[in-house]
Length: 259
Image (cartoon, rainbow, N blue to C red; front, side, top):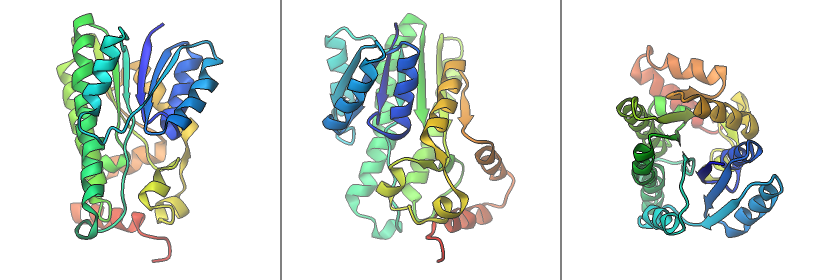
């Protein structure tokens, strides 16, 4: 049995991915802020006959990634698959956004993801075997007025992941950048976008379906995967449209329905 580390595993896409890995007999290390939610997930998945270790941890704390890696090293836990799923967004004009919201997004979506990738990649390269999935978003393909920092962090994840996937092409380690669109999770509530046109008029995919798309892409070693055919079309269209138009449409979509 291989061991899979999933961040942001207490709900949404992370939880659904954990179920998929457990059903295929992978042991799990699950990381999230809520010890109670992790405990509930662990109890459910252990019934499938796999080992589930939970580590309550706030990855917006800069020392957290190294703490996590060191703890698993001390325990002799070898991570064969890393899923960097934890992330959050915040709605609002950048000039009015609280400092902690700005820094928190950058720390979790960029810094923690990068540091976890660096730490767990080295043993994978040494073994010449491993898989990493960095969860970005279709937000990675365009600027995002009213969610400027979130969209920018996901653009980083996309660029970073594609670059290191190329560097690792002969290493035995694969890197997959997974880009979901709007998904029915707690993300929109946390971000303040529940009333946006994206959620109200365009609709969202189920976390179960999105996780299955990501799981299949990861296990196939694909470098880039976009969940949902309509999301793929939208992501590709940004390459050929005028940038000002792309930015204006991006704002319109994330604004409150009826505004």
